[in-house]
Image 1 (spheres, helix red, strand yellow):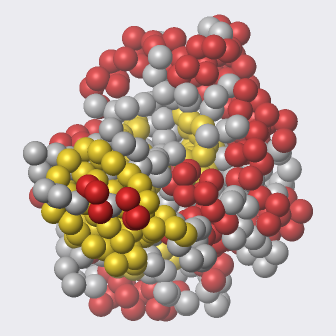
Image 2 (cartoon, helix red, strand yellow; image 1 turned 180 degrees about the horizontal axis):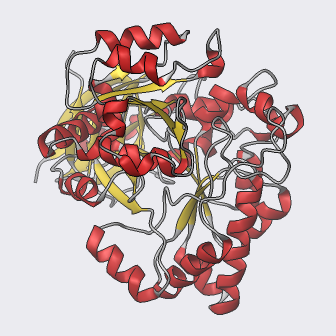
Length: 487
Ligand SMILES: [Zn+2]
């Protein structure tokens, strides 16, 4: 049996700190068969091929718990609008883009612009010159679109979130996004997915959780992704509400998903002022955000999935959104049992505004939190977008990673790519360097939360990543080399 000794490895000493200790790894036929101090290598070298890795840091592969593969891949090939600083720069980028069935762009953020106004639809149409154009806001909860795309999505006109001249949000946004995705042929879609999975591999991510659903992507899209022959593993979540255990079981089978969770939207986002709040937004009179699922539907979904033993979950960002989910969880406890709810390991996406009482209850019910530290890095802090939208007091206690972790809520870190890039070390650093130190994770907890609790263990399939700083030198998952940097 082929036996390899990897020597000269170091365990990570936490982000930003030197690695500690030296270690070695023995892999026999795709399984970790020994792990130990470098000093003990000599006795095992006979008959093995020995690789000296010269101080490379070794970790388990990262798990990105929230991605949108196709949208991310399309943007690798499409328009990056994150650097635009004025409406005119956005229009110039659109005008200069090559012809395509649908022109995809992503990342505009009008609160960073001067002037902070959106281009009008007429301006966008002039730049588009008849092309269908879909430009998602940085949070992907609203989009600027051209008239040619609206012609393919007539249901968007007048739907909730419709605007005759500005970005579309809510249902209107979902209609145009579906039309934009439907305009892609299968080859372009699969090409985008592959480009994204290749990128994930190059960043040391061995598993991604795709948050798919009827409003976000589509069944064909998820089917293609789950069928992709790629070394990066895909766990699929499908965000569609069900009402009975039978419906839940059937839908899971039909979609190939691992849970009826992910982007099943209870509310929207802070940036788009669509996250559901207890108290109004600080920068828009009386605005409490949007509720996309009524409490009765949330409860029915949780009850049905709990009965079927299926992981359920929702996208929920605002504090009042979390109230709706907690009420649904209590309903599921009443109709099944706390033990059944815990066993289903339900999971909530984002969960950015939760107080101590909510956290304690989520912990007691075994609910996991899929969180994005890069959100805090991008929008947290006293001068950040969250503070503008919510005022400093509410903004300061957002994304309470430490409090969730201390209460026993399982944290799963992710990027929500394309909202923030797949960059796991940046996410670990953001969790450790939280804008509110009281909410920061320690490095070991952050790393564990971003690697699926992963540890390198004797007897486990060989899955590991080797690093030089943030650069992934090699990614191996289940004995298969998924990425190797040629130097
Ligand atoms: Zn998402």
